[in-house]
Image 1: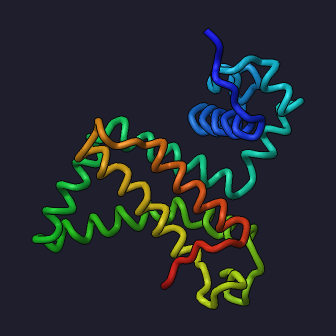
Image 2 (image 1 turned 60 degrees about the vertical axis):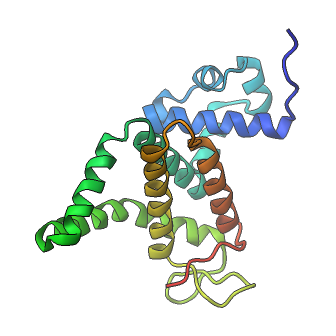
Length: 199
């Protein structure tokens, strides 16, 4: 059987995605060209064609936008593959609507979760455009600045939206498609493009 021909650009993207997966799941020490080839389901030679050495892969996935991709992907996968923790969060959230003490705990848990993204969001924004005096960026097509809190809120919303859809419709929801759309939006942000979060 003849395999489907894939463009070099698409193959490179698949290899980078596999590298993110390996690094996010096992750390940079486990990031070898062979491990990436196995994860991408391509030959070692194919990986070598695109990336001659491990440090080339590491340099690609350590860019701020790539680190954010890896973090989003890991969280989307974790919550959609094993949604029990997210179901429990939803139960607490629903209970917290009626109970102030539970609502306070849910709010604190969400803030702790968002704080894990905030530092990286600041780095992504700084890499994506010209900074203003308050540390946000203002792409030339809008005057509303993109802030770390805004990017963080969107990232958490994407992850929780993914998890919610996976809980409600596990067979009909495609995590990869959801992630790919999120990754494209992040790419536009890191390129100084048109992804905006209004505060």
